[in-house]
Image 1 (tube, rainbow, N blue to C red):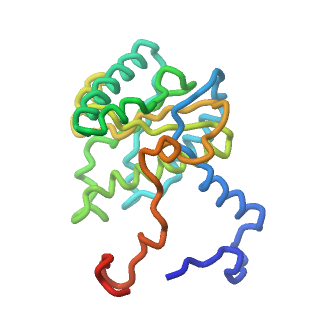
Image 2: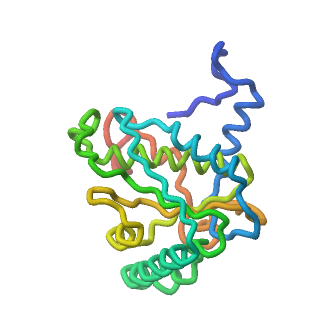
Length: 229
């Protein structure tokens, strides 16, 4: 199966210009999970643009399950950093023979980034059944779309962003005084960077490599290497 080249698709009255399409494909290709930040701030109006873009994400049943907590207190930022370090050590232990390799990686920029956000799923989500009766995890999928919107627009604004998921959810809920039924899913490090990684950092560090798209596409049924295509 081949994927269509956007330059060969038939024209549409609703299509973007070539320059606009190029910008969209470029920001997707150049988005990076950033861990290294430099001095600087995120202007209030820029942060509002990014959060507005996140809030325009699609969500199942239009439930809009995302909640954003902006971390302003230095003491709270440090508490989140320490929580991540505890989970980082436990993750290293769980990785077994790759523990030293993992512990050498820089996995967050909590102390260095200009803005720190926690993204959580709201409480009382069970009331939203539309699209979730058999797939309740679609609330997480919806919030992930919001995070991706924020990530792409941050890159377009020349700002780096990193998604940190190394934390114990219950500890996070306690630190942030979150209500029962809510669930934290991300610490987002956001701010100016000296430069963007030319490739994903985990590729540069030889932790993992991106797999070819062709290996991810199947026709009609689930296929493995042992099945003729």
